[in-house]
Length: 130
Image (cartoon, rainbow, N blue to C red; front, side, top):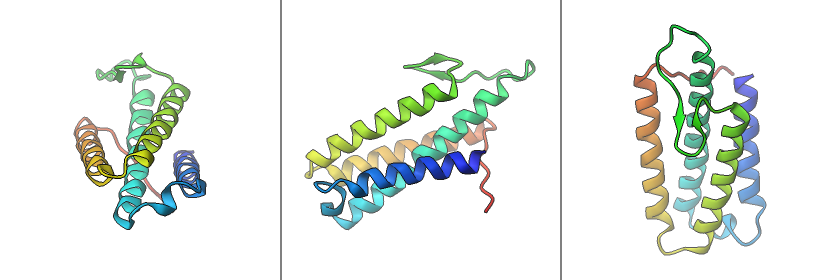
């Protein structure tokens, strides 16, 4: 199920950006690659959040997923909705602001790399099997 979720989210996010005639195709090559990386990192973070939500069902597991917007113990559908809305919003902002796009994407990706690494240290995993 995780593999299917990952592929669907990745495909839909990339498809939206690539099908938008004003945007993605007119971006610099580096910005396109950074956007693709953002989508991948965002998806990994979401799957780690799903892992946390599943682990919280175990009464012996003592870490709680807490999202500043969704609160403690969010539902998976809420996480997906928040990620989708956030991705759309970030895309729209980046599409309109060419001057800082590369720096903005590099910063956002850096934040996600740090978040994923911290999640991994907390015992959250994502497994890819193809």
